[in-house]
Each structure stands twice: as C-alpha cells, then as structure tokens.
Length: 405
Image 1: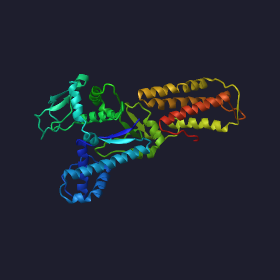
Image 2: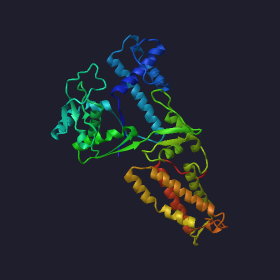
Image 3: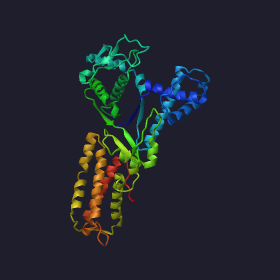
Image 4: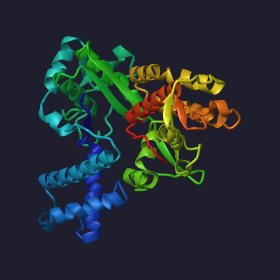
C-alpha cells in the first residue's frame, strides 16, 4: 500500500494564489505591481515575505516575466506543501510520496488516453457551451468531449479547453491512469463532499479504460470548530482560518485523532473543543483510556492468580459478549472503509467495562480482586482480552493506551 499526496498545482486557483502573494509583496514594499488580492490571511503574508526574501533581485524590475512568476509560485507551493506535510506528520498522518499535477502533465499521457477512448466511441469533437473564460479565446474551434452521459452523468464533459490545453478533468484522468500504470489496481481517493458530483465522470472514464480497476472514493464532510456552544466561522479566502497544528496543540493528538474518527466520513461534524478538554465520561476517549488504566491497576495489584469461579453478572455477560464482537467490527470497518465503527465500538465496550466496575459497589462478588487481592484465572483472562481489544482498537486509530491516569 502507498499513501500518496496529490497536489493540484495548475489552473485558475494557482493563478489567484500567485496574484495574492505578489499583491502583498507589492503593497508592503511599494512596488506598484499589477496584481489583485484573492486570498487573505496571515499565511499568505508569511508566504509572501518568504518569496520576497528568496527572490529579492527579481523585484528590481518593474514587471515580472512569466518564468519569474513560475519560479515564485513553485517556491510558494513547495513551502505550503512542506508545511502541510509536517503538520500532518505531527498529527500522526504520514505519506509515502508526493505527486504534482504538473509532473503528470509532463508525462504527456493524454493523447494516448483520448486515442483509447475514441476507439471505444466515448469521445467526440465539438462545443458544449461558452467556457467561463470565453473572452479572448476562440469559441468556434472544436474541443474534445467525453460522453459521460452514457454512464448516467447529467452532461458530457470537456477533456480539452478552447485553447487546446487539458481541462482539470483530463489531468485527473491522466493522474489515475498513471497510478494504474504504476501497478496499483486498487485506488482509494479521499475527497471533500463538495466533489460528489465529480465522481460519475471520473469513475466512468477510468473504468472505460481499465474495466478491471478497483476505484472508490471516501467523501469527507466539513468539520466545524465549536467553542462556548458557538460555531467558529472560517474562510480560506478571507484568511479567517484555524490551523491544524494549533488545534492539535490545544486539544492533544490523542483527542484529535479519536474525534476525527468519531463520525462517519460523509457526516457533518461539530468538533466541540470544550467537551474534548473535559476529563470525565462526557469525553469518550478519556473514558476509554480510563477503563484501560483501571484494568491495568487490577493486574498490577494482584497478589496471586487462583482457580475460582467468577460470577456471571448481567454486566459481565454484556462485556464478554461485546468483546467477542471485536473481530466482526474490524472486518466491517475494513470492508466499508468506515473507521468510525472502531471509535464507536471502543466507546461502547469501555462503557460496559465501567458498568461492571461500578456494579461491584452493590455486588461485592463482582469485584475482580478478593480481600487478599487474589485474582481468578477467568478474571485475569478477561482483563487481558479486554486490554488486547482496547490496544488494537486504539492502535488502528493511531493512539497508545495509557497504563495509568
């Protein structure tokens, strides 16, 4: 398995990104350069200053060449990507390699892709409608179009623009073809939920080229940050953002990893910062870790392990039954690509453990240890199985169990 970080570093958004950086440089250093501001915020200002320091000589000229603009934007993108990868690594998320969209374009895969789709009768040449940037382009020349309506899409999709360059869609087809040609037959993408409508056209094109490919997408909804029962409003364009590394510092990596896995990927999540910081049963991961620490305290306090019967109370039966569900939960989580099943299971089994623990107050026979701190063989086996399940579950989420709390 390879975890690949894909960077879209072409197109209009990159142009606006570059323009925003150069606008800030021009404003701060009184250069009177002809650029507009599209993205705001401290991160743009910091990137702009890095670019200015690295390319001071370039700004001696009143006008930048296309090559100079390219040098600056590539430097800015590389900085932003490296910063993102470091933040992800610090959060326990690691990638094996990075692939840039420009590197896919340089491989010139598109002509062969179009040729293969033409053989299957899935492309034609013509016009769909005026492109968004139709001013200054030739509207009468033909573009290459993929017949995505053959696969249930609501309209056919352009593969080339009016100026002959590939569309965003075309480069995405090429990227997935490149992955398949690198001997990866199972491809799992992680997309934002706002790209749901994009799935039909891409999967149709890819399966048309390689019917045997196993292609799927995990869609993730937006995560809102909530403080004092209020959702924090954020916008990347306005610069009102709260960076991930700051969040991890504030709530801790374990809380972050658990709660990001707590909801189904395609479900909206309000990340309640105040709740996450609580150290009681309202905070699921705290309660799970506390259950593990409690089980460990019993094992450490044990004087002797003896052969004696353990009372099968209602609470104990529930816990044993839940522990035996673990393998099925893992299997379903794997088959459905739904890690939240693990998080929910851990919360549920920990709750049953605490119920068994609390029941000993009214039923002394439910205690793990007798008056001489002896532990029955069955109870020892149960505690070790419980710890194994919790350790494996937390391990899947990238969290280490705590022996003491």
